[in-house]
Image (cartoon, rainbow, N blue to C red; front, side, top):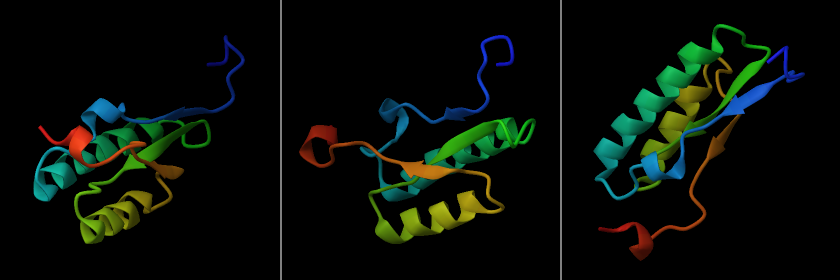
Length: 91
């Protein structure tokens, strides 16, 4: 990052891995795995490495709880989601 003049890097999971097509409990499990991994990576340089939280949009309550969990203690900068939802994601 220093070599390339980057002060802060923000990372997030690619939308292909959001698991919206899975049942809510599996979506939550995927979100927790990615959010915990991002937290671990960002802990190496918390002022320079940031992440966007992933939540299981299949269930509003689970999504809100995961957002609260992932934000503690200020591990993530924001939340990310796909731009479309519904039949396009059902398989």
